[in-house]
Amino acid sequence: MHETMNFAALKKLPLLFVCENNQYSVMTPLAERQPERDIYKIAAAHGLQAACGDGNRVDQVYALAQTAVANARAGLGPQFLELHTHRWPEHCGPNEDDELGYRNPGELASWKQQCPLLQTRQALLDSRLSSEPELADMETALADEIDQAFQWALQGSRPSIDSMGRHLYA
Image (cartoon, rainbow, N blue to C red; front, side, top):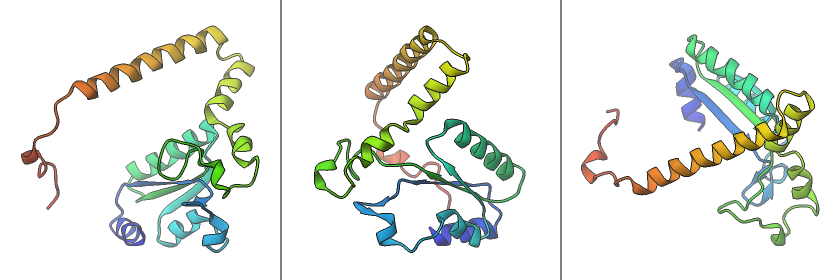
């Protein structure tokens, strides 16, 4: 990762690196695995423009991403975003793993209250930018779109072995 950031900065590549800082390193709290420091500052030390924000705030993530993408497209080199959030499921898989005891009691429940989808939904309702029926229609439309994309992927053919070398940089 360090060499990639270094090379990207050296060549002023238009890349966007995003670190989803979920506060853990596998099943160990980050503070027990690394010294106390902001990860985005490590990227800045490599010469990247770097920022951090609350990964559970959709509006904040959007604003940070919009700025970073614009900077990369403007030729200002690679960008780095550190977004603080929390990992809900286990490290490798779709299940919850509170029974393993590596999280403090109530920690996961507390973070679930900060769910970006629920926060955004409530903000839309509070600001009267949307109503319950409009959001319900939107959720139905999105669920249908996801289902259609999933079905399309399942019905598609697998790539051929000879296509493996296509689109590679040499």
